[in-house]
Length: 238
Image (cartoon, rainbow, N blue to C red; front, side):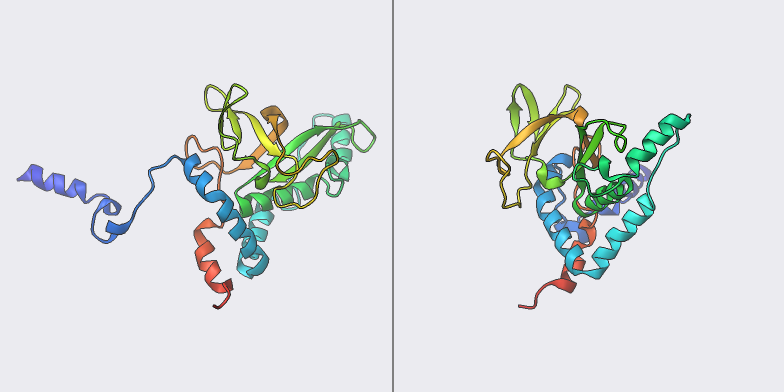
């Protein structure tokens, strides 16, 4: 009798596993990457729409960005020449591939993209060494849409999942990136469109996202848990 009672108490230890109120709770057993791949594009589009149209969504993104980045994340160097070179690079727009933001503006842009879309990519591009750019590096910030998730299977001898080439241990070794945003209507010189994607070595790409499960390669918008509630406030009345 005591064993039966102990077994009953053990079973009831996790209320979420019971078949009472949660009987219609159909939880997914898919991997983190599979779940993200199926949901990320739709969730990102809806999150961006909410940020454009809902003041609460816009405020959430502003708060996350401000709390994480603030006035900008910087570093310290052990000697003056390195510190001065870093200052000239980070304080000028020469560090930006588009030539518009300094390093701290880029940090805020990246953080906003991560909160809004779930992930962001930064390409490390070589640059001519100048007085404004003594590092010889430019940073190109790309939205998550630039990842060519249609690239699946073994491509050029590399196992590829949702546009990410993987090594033996599952580490990223390359990213298939669109040269033009898929939502753009313009064409690059030479005729390249958003249909054109190229494999960029992982050493030349920073993928910024929040990893919350083992084996997770990508993430969804941080607004995902509240999007349904936000939508009720901005949905058009039919």
